[in-house]
Amino acid sequence: TYWKRDIKDAHMLPDNTPQKLEGDAAVAVVDQSEEKRTVSVGSSWNAAGTWEEKDMSSQARAELERILDASEGFVLLDNGDVGTRICACKATVTGDSQAFNIRGKPRLGFEFKVKCSWKGTFEG
Image 1 (cartoon, rainbow, N blue to C red):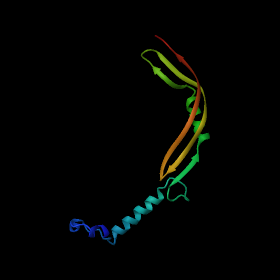
Image 2: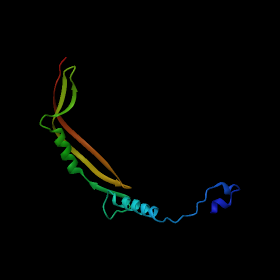
Image 3: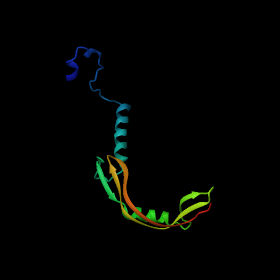
Image 4: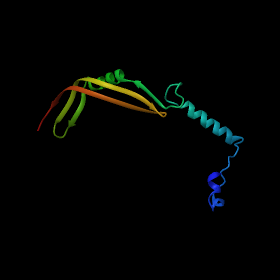
């Protein structure tokens, strides 16, 4: 190659000429490349998986409010040995949430403001 011819110890470098794959080796390479294409997380039009963004704000806000508004209350602090317990009663969530697909990897982004009423017991 170009780089190999300009150095005096080029004979020490391994041979890097392309080798034709035949038989089982060729089939294995084809199977691996097809598997990589079908594992894509994003849309079918985005085969390269470069960047994709989906608004998930309404679903994320609803789920977070559901978790915080549980009938038994979401426990914010439970210090049983002292007798202190604080639970969320009602929560209002505002903000945005997106699901990203960046280079084939799913990621989440969010910015929420949570306004929460709470009740608690304090002893000690």
